[in-house]
Image (cartoon, rainbow, N blue to C red; front, side, top):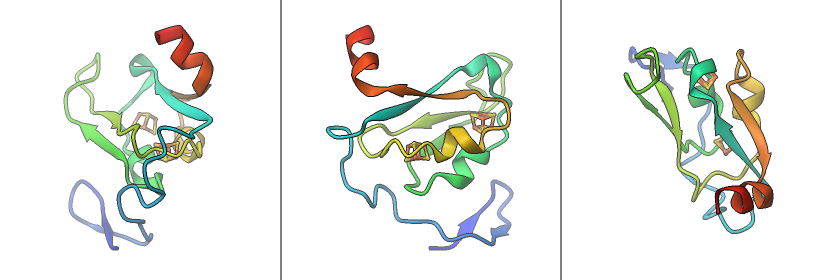
Length: 103
Ligand code: SF4
Ligand code: SF4
């Protein structure tokens, strides 16, 4: 599948279909959690997610910046988004701990 940036330019990367790993919410070990105050809205996580499960929500950040919204039913917890993030706004959190904490 071809990829394009927000301005419509073709990107030299291949993108898997959305949720190609299937529903991962039941077996994912880690989940990316966003700290919106650290996010600059740079779109790098959106570009690099191999499952295409990140949507950027324009204007939803605390400074009016775009922030990523992750479709957790299909996120496999690979951590690529967190590694790509230049400001460490995405933290990989242990899934069980997260569920107990938010629970
Ligand atoms: S951990 Fe990040 S890069 Fe990996 S599937 Fe989930 S949202 Fe995409
Ligand atoms: S890579 Fe990091 S700073 Fe850039 S949009 Fe994603 S979370 Fe925000």
